Image (cartoon, rainbow, N blue to C red; front, side, top):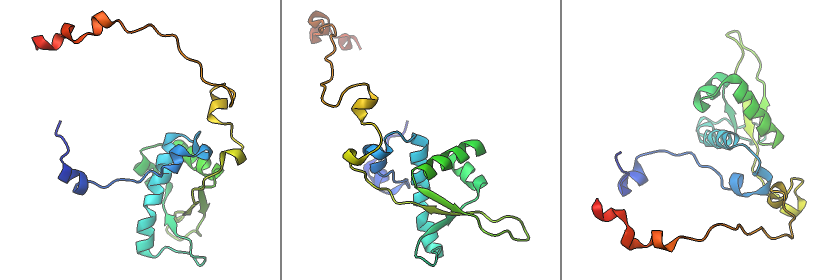
Length: 164
């Protein structure tokens, strides 16, 4: 394995941004990881859309992506892609507008992305993390009764690293 140097870390690779809200906000807690990654990849493509001037009459930026290109980019089947899109629609994070057909065939849909929004836990319709884990909100977590550490075995004088 070749280790990453400080210089390489800052200059060598491009990365997708994964919005923290997708991982920290109660609203998105149950969303599958693949859906979060798909949203992040699509959001990254908005930069390309802006550079090409893909902005509608209302000022909204859109993507033009065929399902086949999205499947290749995400490394998934058509059924998986449709499942991901369905979930994104349920969270109001994607809206597709079918473009008219041309003589060469059907054009790729315009894809609009929805803004991520934080929902206060008090107003959330989703059960809290504690409720999902089968615990009342006012109840403290049980303490596990694990065996104490065997100090004779864990003392450093018995370390096997001296023989290496």
